[in-house]
Length: 136
Image (cartoon, rainbow, N blue to C red):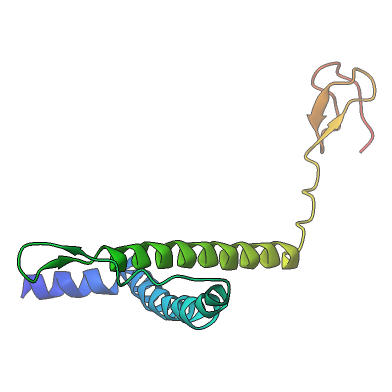
């Protein structure tokens, strides 16, 4: 019975739930990016002489072939997806930074003694450096 209880506690921890949500959202986002590349970017690149390397093979012993063209296509797709993902995240970060409200400056916690010019606490009524009485 102890292992079931430990497993339940492990699953219900916040970071495991956050990770699960991240994986699910990542899968959905991956589908969006893949569709963007396959359905939008690749056809546009095809208009400019895009090449399909899937026919490139290296014959091995017997009927076996090394399908190097499929690997080249996968690498090209990876680079395109990486570039698109970089651009999407960069645009999202830029938009988020423009929408972020500027933080109000913090209230000062110190002031300068008008007599000795030392930095003192803002609520001080007597300078600890020169013993002058200060206005509040």
